[in-house]
Length: 180
View 1 (tube, rainbow, N blue to C red):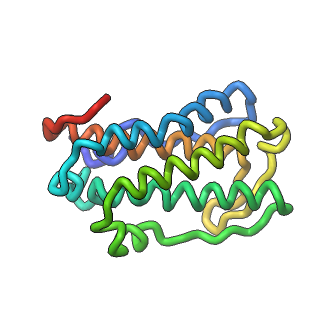
View 2: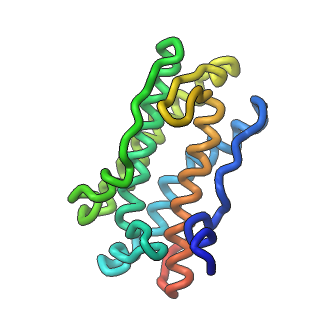
View 3: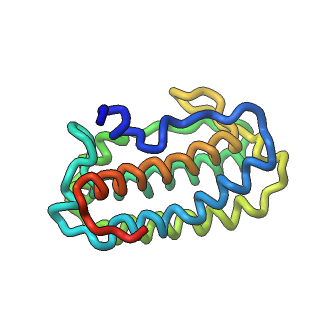
């Protein structure tokens, strides 16, 4: 299996073209289910399995789990800023450096699964109350440029699915028992 297939088991992110309200419901559903899918993917894994890299030179399963709420918290804050300010400038963060911090390398994954669930509950409560035109609001990212909330929703729906698939694909390759 190629490194790219290991890194992107669900494929690379494909940016939406235009803003279509019909696309939002499935993306919101993906944000709804992501924490439970993550929980099921890791609940039966032991420390040795959690400390296995999902691909050569990649993060461990544990680091992937801790990365998800780190990333989604940043996205949620950017989302809130875009709703409350006119095209705010947001900061980037060094996700690879965050993944090397002690709690990301050795911490219990249940904490991050619970944190992801809590962030998604708040985010979803807000998303479901937005008017369609609010998804057109934007923020300015230092590397990505202008980002709409429509794009952000699509990206983070994919992001959760992407990382859960990295874990479940590894579990399948290794013959580990996980819940579907």
